[in-house]
Length: 90
Image 1: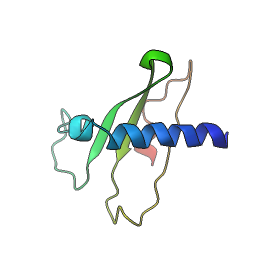
Image 2: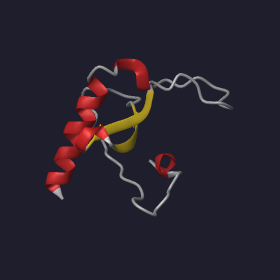
Image 3: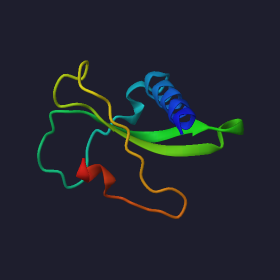
């Protein structure tokens, strides 16, 4: 399990800090009537042979000190397990 987590972190950090830059930044949310004081990124991580494997991620920046605050990875669902409200409980 630790190996899978380490591989995921490597893919995640490479995809966020790589050439995508601000491309995955969520700029607006339909129906949201207030401004947030943090950034949200949403996109897909590519992997596997020929980059055919895709995994969705959502990164919500810390509202405090992002340099010192811990980073939490939240895994939802899986094949056949859909859980749309996972990010709302954190």
